[in-house]
Image (cartoon, rainbow, N blue to C red; front, side, top):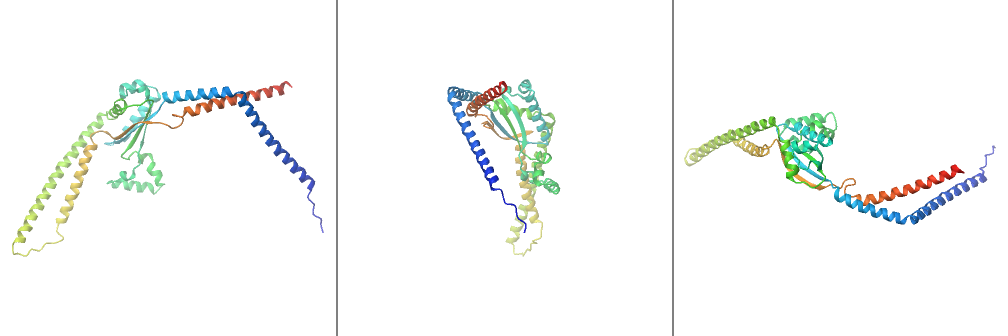
Length: 327
């Protein structure tokens, strides 16, 4: 029988001793580092307290003076003016990036143009409104969804721009009001001769539809009244009259209901068509607390102390390396 090699227990004991020794050295180094940190804090306690107080005071001052406010407008572009609206917003944004406060003040009409910081627009995803009473939009969604993810289709730029409502967001460095920003901005967005002509004709078309539909409803009412009189007169006589259930009476009543429903829709439509870019709601002066906004009173003291500690570590490292070099 072949003899199997016996494990070297002595080597194993040496390895375990070395591992144990290294673990001990590791924890000893941690203990030494912690003690050096305590000594560093003890030597520089006054400096750290002063830096903390300066950081808190400066943070409070900056939080009070450098505020950012979010403002939002929900709009509904009419007469196919979606691309026009987006191009106008992009133009304003380019003027902000170029710091062209003269354009913002004189052309757009924003009074505190230097405090107008940023503007953007995005569609409000509402697929139900997108396909409501619009068979072609529903079929378009179905067709586009066959070749890809429905979520990507709904968020696609081509689809999303055709949603009825869009959110305009802009930031200001101080509190604002309607006269300073909202009203001038809406006036600027509605300033288009081409879309004013479209608006005029569209409103006239809706009014014509209302008049014509009212005329049709009156004719239907006249027909129904005469029919009702005929029925009442025959019921008083002794003659037996048979009515055909398949007559067009039900179709007439149904048509009247559809026309009345369309009349209600057209009257609401007239309210929406009073502007090229119709504003539905506005919310202003929402204090922005994202990122470091309003939090400098907490972050500056920690930043100053961190920089001081890193400076101390660098000085200590520099001295050690100089001693090694000189030795």
